[in-house]
Structures are given as structure tokens and as C-alpha cells.
Length: 287
Image (cartoon, rainbow, N blue to C red; front, side, top):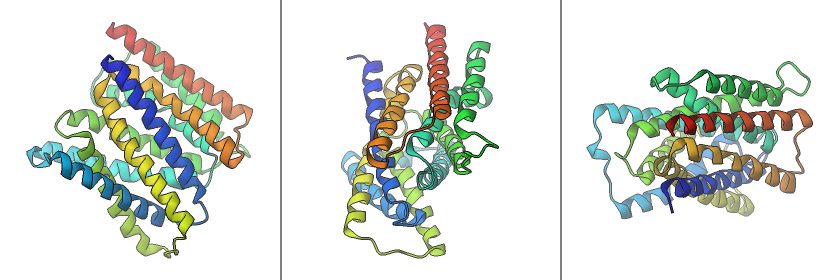
């Protein structure tokens, strides 16, 4: 099996894991506050990752000052992404939120072009512009269907873009589990501190079960997402992010009786289409 095929399988697994996590967390909306949800889930994920890292060894001490700063930036971006995504999940449809996140295969090459100097031709720039128009069909700014929490999704896109770029910068200096451990630690500490400013709600048995299931899903999602970025060519594996949208549509319909309106579905189709074209162009240029 080639590295690209393995990377694609890792990406598919990660998208299914994250979609399952999102659905479980959404089910807790109105039951637990946002920060308490993040703190408890973060603690459980941190415990799972700590056991994994302890068994496989520790290499962080080998990082230089610049790499430690990049790792810190990645941790902050992970905290921001977790907060914005969970808040959006509690307040909007699962499929709409996931559809907005599908512009990531467009924002990552754009950010690499702006900040890392990677080449980006006019065709891919045009595809990115059209993809953002598709995003506007989902967000619907200024209309009666506008949900301010769509802006939280856009903020999450920025955070995840930074997270993925920093993962590339760190290269092979950290294992997938070590990188994931730092992300979970940042979310746990930040959310734990934030719980001081909101009341703590007793956690029922079903809520504990949901939090545990979410923690297991995001634990595997963290690991295989980093493995996907490192294993295959990013231009090939990134197109399999769209599996997350299919999973979100199914989970949203089955468990929450949600189905996006025609405009949102059109916007999602535009994003997927332009993202696929941008990835095709990247592969063609490398070929």
C-alpha cells in the first residue's frame, strides 16, 4: 500500500472520528456548560495520550527554542479551535458547521502562500475565491437565516489552519502522540481555568458516558489526523476531508433530525467542488 493510500485512509478515519465526537458533544448542549465540557473531555483525552506517550518514549527535550515557540502556537490554536467548534455545535446544525469547516483545504494552501511563500497559481486562487463564495451561501450574512455562531466556525477555520501549518513546520521532530498530547494539555488547562467563571453542573451517568465516548473519538482523531498529514502527500490526502461532511449529514439527520436547506447544500457543493479542483491543480503541478 502506497503512502498516499495509507494517508487517505488515516484522513478518512480522522474525519469519521471528529464527526462522531461533534455529534456526541452536540448531544450535551443544554446539559453541560461549554467550558466544563471542554475541561472534562480534555482531561480524559490527556490521560489517554499520556499513557500512550509514556509507553512510546518522550522526545520534547530535543526541541530548540524556535520549535518550542511553534509548539506553543499550535497549542493556542488548538485551544481556540476547541472553544469555537464546541460553542458552534451547541448553537447550530451539525452539517452546516461541518460544511463551513470544509474550506480548510482551501485556506491551508492560501495561508502557505501568504506566510510560507509556497507558489499558488491564478487557477487555484480563483478556486479559493469561489470556495469562499460557497461558504457565504452557508453563512448567509445579513439574512434572516444568519446565525452568528457561523462566525465561530470561521474563527475555528483560522485556528485549524494555523494548527496544520505548525504541524508541517515541526516535521518529524515530534511523534504524532506527543503533538496531540500538547494540544490536549492546552485545551484542558485553558478550559479548566475558564470553569471558574461559570457554574459547575453535576455530571449524570449518561453525560459521563457521552464524555467518555467523545474523548475516545477525539483521541483517535488527534492521532490519525497527524499521521495523515505526515504519511501521504497533503494535496492527495486533504481531499478526503470531505468524508467529514458526509458523516455529519448522516449523523445530523439520524440523531438530530437536521437537514440543511437548499442554499446551504449548494454552498457545501461549491466548497467541495472548488476544493477538489484546487487539490487537482496542486497534484497536476507536482506531476
